[in-house]
Length: 416
Image (cartoon, rainbow, N blue to C red):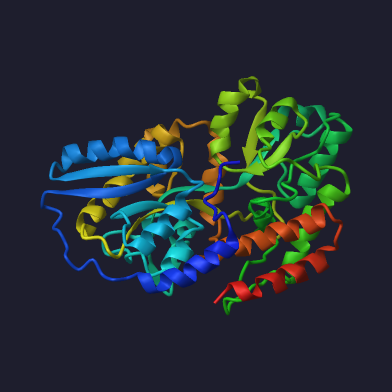
């Protein structure tokens, strides 16, 4: 699965947070006008960083007084580099920031609030915007988004006697059984059983059960009846031998999707391109669908936002570059370049998106109802406890109710 920005060591992150709180927010009071000659420093992550450098040169052609200097940073080291830069007072002017990282850097007081007169909430998918909001203030402008939907093999479904996508949890379970019993696949589906990132597959079950990560007072809500129900549904696939109970950290579900061993799974929109590149023989033999519904069909929003740092002396130029990156035409061009879905909803009316593979339609529908992962300063520790809770039911056979109670207790000290 596409890596979500993660913190390597939860305990290290906690220590870093404590040490850094006193090192932030000193000001950036000497501001340079957007009309002045200047260099805007930007950090872009992973492959996006390389694309961003090209876009920066195009921007400079239209704004010759602003030279955009992009530094690509690997997702595996981005947290370390950002926290070190905060401590040293050596942050760039702006950066791309993963959706689950925002909470920590808001807490560090390192981010400049978004000018909400320039950037309008209603232009973006609601959950993407809300993921950067803390205490009523927005700290990131959504750049690109992803969410989770269902991939399933239509040729094997036909062999199993199923001719339509699963719409409910019962349909999904029935299809998994039919794949294995009638189409003779090795497994009926793939649900990540454990390890880092297992929360990404389980969270749609929680949201679709009507549950949430936090209650109305901001405290963990992981022992709710809805959470237990989501764990029960998730665990049933392992209990009935429909999903493998272990997979290596570098497991690639696309390979098993290609062979038919795992004919169904939940993942993000980038997999459409991966299948096209790695499993071209699947053309016309698979489809995507919105998540089968429990109480609802509800996924979560990931992706990246554009942030400006509080100490920057080039906030006006950063605002101009952010406007350029998030306007409709550029968002559509970004999809064509990077195959990442636009955060600006109007870009979906542009030709590049209208001519996109039909498998992306399910993701556009899913984004309209997807929910936010709340911006938590200790999200990496919090999500790590969910990973462990998932492993308890998938691999250790622990009862969902007991695992839910464990997750609740394990996360109670990880929120404000």
